Amino acid sequence: MADYGDNKRQEGDVFLYQTVDGGDINVTSGIAQMTVGFETMAYLSLFGGNADDPGLDDTRLQWWGNFDETDAAFQYRSQTQYLLRSIPATSANLIRVQDAVTADLSRDFIATGIAGAVNVEVSIPRLNAVQIDIRIEADGEISEFTFFENWRAAI
Image (cartoon, rainbow, N blue to C red; front, side, top):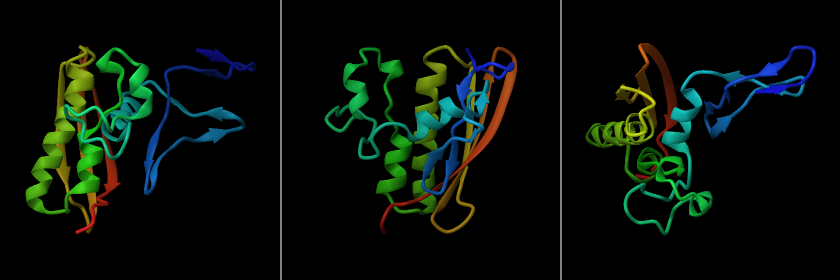
């Protein structure tokens, strides 16, 4: 927790939100907007790391920051990000993306014990876009939020 005088305390994580070209943060009067929810962690689970890394066993394409991190729970790897850039936006591939979102979030929330349940629904709301609805249950609390991402794979 940082104290910047005048009772402007920053607690939690920097709120990282989705834009059409990646993540962004809000800064007002030099102070970053914060969140105590799971949005930033979920965003990094789905879109963090190297976009060319399929998030599987091959480690050659991992994000450079992973090489000094010995605990896999703290490494950024995303099957979701990779699929949205490597397979065409079709209803059949939507199932693959939903499975990837579930796997990425389960690795970071369930396997680490942060949450007890993660539920995901993925849809195609418009041409070349994906909507990811997330529901996370942790310690009896429910967090729900949605990410919209461009499906960038060339057809």
